[in-house]
Length: 97
Image (cartoon, rainbow, N blue to C red; front, top):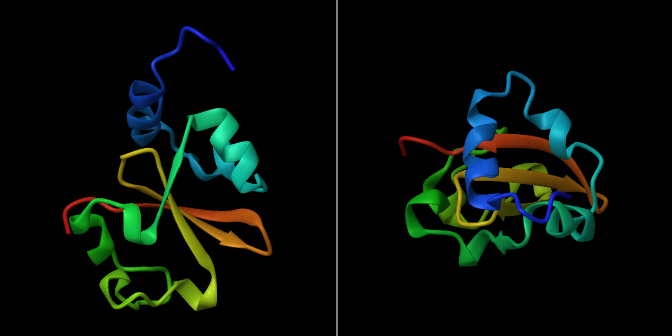
C-alpha cells in the first residue's frame, strides 16, 4: 500500500472502476483493513447505509445479512463488502437509499 495515498479518496474513486469487486474479492477482513485502513460492521455504518438492499432482496435495516453472510463497510463509505467463510465474495455500492 502507498503510505502517501488518501484512503478515503481511493475508496471513493472505486465508483469509477468497472469491476471494483475484483479489488476486494477473496480478501479476509484483516487484508481489507490493511488495504483500506479500517472497516465498519453493519451496526457501525452510517444509519442510511443500513437501509441498503442486499443481494437477496432483504433490507439491511432489519439486520438480515445477505443469504446469512457477514457484511462490512469500507471505511465510512457506501461500499458494502459481503463476506462468506471469512472472505470477500461481493461488493455492493449502497447509494441513493
